[in-house]
Amino acid sequence: MKFSIQLSAYFPDKAYGGDRIYQDMIDQAVLADQLGYDAVSITEHHLINILMMPAPLQFAVKLASATEKIKIMTSVVVLPLHDMRTYAGEVICADIFTQQRLMLGVGRGAFGFEMQRLGAPLEITQEKFNESLDVLQALLNEEEVYWDGKYYQFDPITIMPRPVRQVPIMMAVMNPEGIYHCTKRGFHIQTTPLAGNHQLMIDQVDAFNRGKEDLGDKGKELTLSLSRVTFLARNQIDQRRKVEQAHDYYSRFDNVFTGPGIVESGMIKPLPRKMTIEQTAENLTICTAQEMVDKLSLYANAGVDRMILNVNFGMSQSETLETIEQFAQQVMPYFSAGATAAA
Image (cartoon, rainbow, N blue to C red; front, side, top):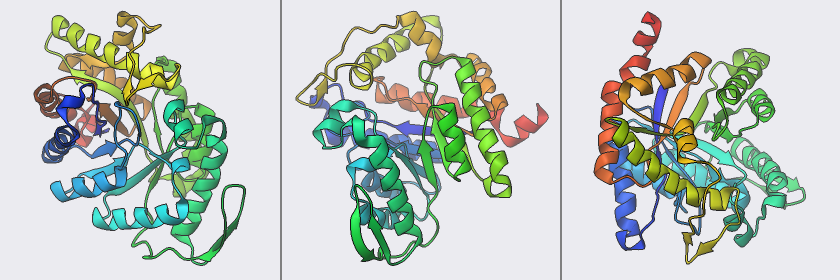
């Protein structure tokens, strides 16, 4: 099992400055590259102060200039917010500028607040996403493409420059049946059980494996990535402190994900959570190194190819860099190819 660091900027204090928060993300990527992580991943969100990245492809190019070999994934770009006739060219350029290290994760959008205000309310995003994805694939793979659909109508066009390779596309989907159908179409998968139980994760992996089997040889290279909030703790007291911080972070996340979407001047209002701190601790992977190995072994044994570690939920940059380094030293060796074979 491989590992990725999610560069999901959390911005609870405007005084900290956008320049500083993104430099923190760059420093995390440089360290991850040096320590042998497989990838870093970049979110796309607008108008809000969590998961804050309105320019993921630009950031991917910046990260490529600061690193040497680490893959750069979008997790995910929100297709209904873009015009595929221009976005296809941006993807091609980003892939060239990142030395073909780009992996394009795509999704429909999840936060009603931003989608409504940007002209793509959640009620239409699934339908618009499906058409946008079809248009994007056609423009990336074919020349003289024309379209006559609900959201796109255009005469024949050819995106220039042409791709130097087929850019890998990763689909963001949680529902097991959706995972099965997306895998069967030849997409890499990114998922998360969020607050779901272990059985949901097993069902997600099983759906992915069924889709790969149906594809036969064409599915051998497909990967399943799973995202979780992850952080190392020294002891129970330290764990409690970090879980409390994550709980506070989710009081904002829940507001825009499943709640009313109350945002004031870009800052999401924290709201009381239905979930207790104890339940938060159960659902996240914030623990000591040995406990981390035990927990992540469940994912590795189930068949997850890549864990995406969300380490940006409000801890200081020094502690975040420390956990990235210690995770590489104390946890990752247990999941190397050699260690897996020995086990």
